[in-house]
Amino acid sequence: MKEETSQQNLPRQELNPERELPKPSLMEKIVEFFRRHATKKNIIAVIVILAVIAVAIGLRMTIFKPAPKQIYQVAIMVRDQVNKDKAEDLRTSLKRGDALVVQNENHKFSKTESVSYLILKMKLNEEQAAKLTMADEKELTKKEIKAEIEKMREERSQRATEFNQEISEEELEREEEEIRQRRISIRPRLYFIDLNQKKFEGFEANDLLEGQPFTEKVYNWRIVDKK
Image (cartoon, rainbow, N blue to C red; front, top):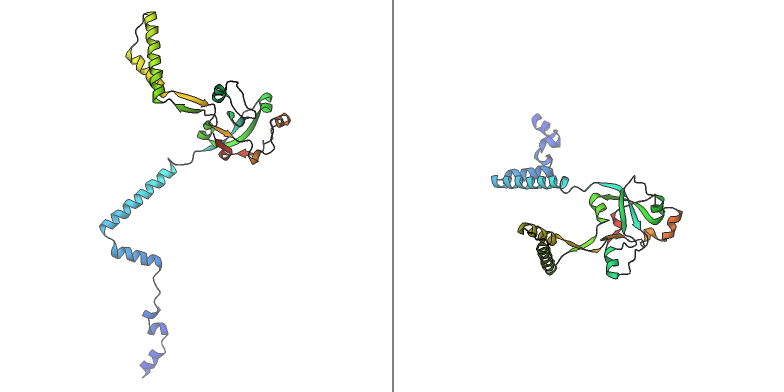
């Protein structure tokens, strides 16, 4: 009787231990699932996937790492250059918004340059800086290449006859390859900065006589447009 009474006085947890056991966490359930269902084939597949992810991360940190940027000073045309020959004007004349030159951050422009061109500070990578002064060019068509090669061979043949010279086939092939790689300039710049956008609202070329208006700002590639 005494023994029976002492059992009744025991804490509820001791009388029903299974009912009070803590539930397994989500992580424990996941680990248990893989322990029960994992096979050698599955483990290899997981290892391969993890290896691919590791390689992708490595490439992201090296090959695809964003190019470093630095601050440049860009001298920009504020007036159009004009040539009476329309074809020549398109091919050689710089227009308002075209970058004349890109210099490093510490470059000192002359007084004449400072009143002639808008000078902006821009934070760019090396490729972007090069693009600002890149010409708009195109490759020769097959028809143009053929015509240029025929013209070159004819001129070389006439010159050889006139001066009694021999022209090696190797030399002709080298000149032909140069023609195939030749590019025709369409206009002197492929990219430009639109000075009519809101950032430069109200700016006029004559404002430069009173000094550079945007010396306190540093711009980025977002102000650049492609023609």
